Image 1 (spheres, one colour):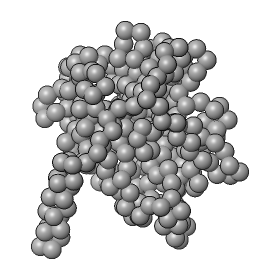
Image 2 (cartoon, helix red, strand yellow):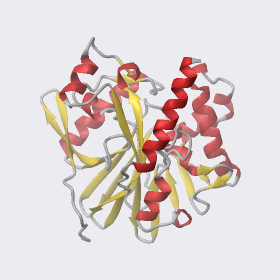
Image 3 (cartoon, one colour):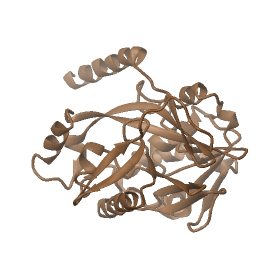
Image 4 (cartoon, one colour):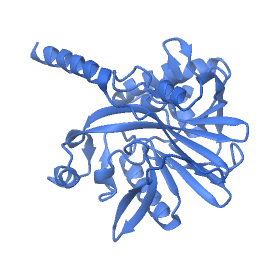
Length: 311
């Protein structure tokens, strides 16, 4: 009973908070000839002391304290709009109403940026967790009715393939239900395309296999006029911890060992390449650079700008 009352009070608090919460909405960046707009879906509180794994005693609390954070941290949920040529391409789709009133802001942010959901031509999915595909649906209505949904073949097989459907681990049943409810309507409508790695999906947009968090977890590399930005999806869940300790994993990882290896690879490549990175769970807008600092890494967020320069 006490737990139920506490849950009710938490919901009421979040609802009241949501009514007056600050909402950044969108942030634009120019990458060569391509415009990228970060879109906020909101934030969700995560108890990192309970969710993170492969940690040393006291490590999580120490690193969070050094970043002036409590153990329960608001995690941003970001998506990104790519305007290239005559195409509007969304990278991930947020949560819709699946995780409470502090999330589900994506279509509002899209409207603030000057677009409507029916203008979206394609949605590139990094992976099929609910905070990346939940926003595809609003009840039984397709939010992006004119869009084609792109998912890597390994990701589609894992979540929607007949073979995997019969072997759903108990821990992942909830994830499967959300994935099915969010993506299956598009599959039935013939609006889902799966892809192999190694070839561009659109001019200047190349998918990269980065498994671990999920079996078909995908980065998308955007290139234009010698400039580059890589959409990271869920390689980072806590910037305060995982840039310093890349081996730290999270309960949401399907394969924690592979997820840690992918993160180390991503950090090393970004630090060496000096290109832009866009990450779904780094504080909005989630865009910046990575700098190496010995065996650790430092996140260098984009300098705030009120305009973009068309190049």
